[in-house]
Image (cartoon, rainbow, N blue to C red):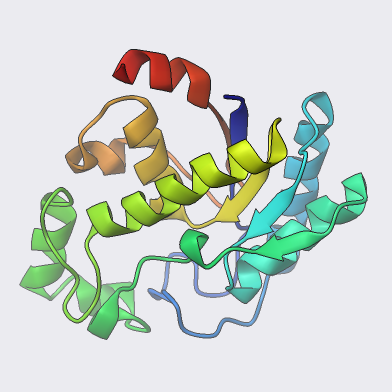
Length: 189
């Protein structure tokens, strides 16, 4: 079983201000495009065999920048979509900081559910299943362009960490991580 590259989309206007979630976004900022170009350059050492992106505009634009460098098509993967934040989608972080449920969800990622949305564990499970599927389909290192909490949850899985540790995993816009699925699978066996 080979490895997979995980790439968080580049910056967009809402980063750090508003929980965009699955709502429409305006795409990447100039900084976000630069982050995607930087990630593409870092992939020169281990070019992707295929490129998948979540359905969100910010991930598709990030993936397209990388795809152009390697002459690959971008395939859409709903399993890589952002967490379904339910009623929190679109709210400013300043507003969320006054909601005790927001604190509970962030403190209890192993079990808590977003109001009207999904749990971190559900999001991790769908993304993880697709990660193995994409890896098996392409036989080498596919690139999965997705979202911060999806990347962090997959890193937690790979490192055998609780989802309660998710905030300890750094994942800035444009962050690129490679997971060795074979090594992780051996540890799990």
